[in-house]
Length: 385
Ligand SMILES: Cc1cc2nc3c(=O)[nH]c(=O)nc-3n(C[C@H](O)[C@H](O)[C@H](O)COP(=O)(O)OP(=O)(O)OC[C@H]3O[C@@H](n4cnc5c(N)ncnc54)[C@H](O)[C@@H]3O)c2cc1C
Image (cartoon, rainbow, N blue to C red; front, side, top):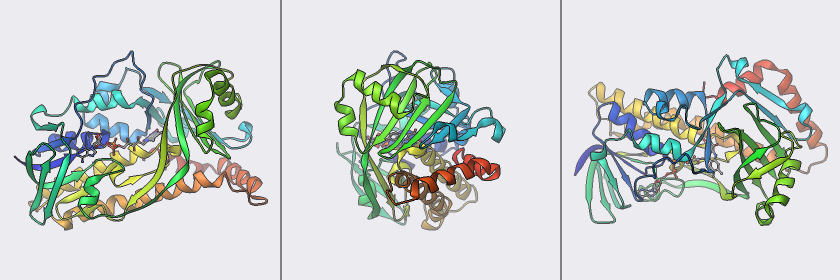
């Protein structure tokens, strides 16, 4: 079977690319080794949530996807407080400073995934079999799936996640390392209301975030070198330690879901493109979750890639050529590397034991707080503006 473009991987990034390509009039298909995502069930909690930036939300609106999410359990947040030692000296970001209705919105993975999936043309979904073999040349890509199906296309987009097999099949190396921290996630109930304010505290053992959910609870992402110990605590002991770690900014923590945890890795592909081939999302880069930017970077890749492919096709040129795909790489690589460097630097800045470093670092944060233009610049960057 032949398509213009095939996207491998039905994560958020892969589904968004297919949706945008179909909207732009391409014959675009999706290959996913698993099945269709489960329909969103409001009675179920999904512990994986995303802090979507205003830029990502705008793009999802243009795809007709955000309209399916809005009004469910999506939780806009108006402000963010970031500190290390003393909450009263926190760095504060406010949507009003950027003249935005919100700094972003917290949304569950399953809800967004289902909303995206429902927008795709069912006739162009190849599910239940992984890509097993790949041949690439300057004319196109040929794929063999695990169940023997054979597919061809002008461009193959690999959005098959951080362990991307297709990246390896295309001969693209990565650089990266594992963090000693693991991220613990849960939804917790707090004595004080969150008031649509996100919190982030940098502890010596790693960053802890409280993200305000639409139903009044908070989603926590606690990246810690002590994750094993924290996961071994019973609920009461864990919640007491959590309340202390966030310095009682939300009062006592009165309830929790089960906890889950994820390993953390920095990974970056040396190249994003080959003839007839492009990487997007976590297949190209994975970042520390402390700035909540992973999927936002993936959506920015998706928007840039679809725009380059569409412009090239509309100009009557070959959108699968290396020359065209390199334009996409140039548009995204530097921005992704900047975010990788910032998040990696931040993840390390708070566990340094150098004499005099901690007070210097706190002074730096206070200086940023006082320098409104710099603060606005940082906030604009995070909002994808
Ligand atoms: C604890 C934690 C918290 C996070 N919090 C945030 C946050 O607040 N905000 C944020 O923006 N990001 C966050 N992230 C990052 C975010 O989860 C990822 O950036 C995002 O899920 C990557 O999406 P993706 O579509 O690129 O890849 P994935 O979601 O990994 O999807 C890859 C898909 O490819 C399929 N696949 C794999 N191999 C094949 C194959 N050979 N053939 C066919 N299909 C294949 C897989 O089955 C899967 O469906 C967080 C991550 C962690 C670990």
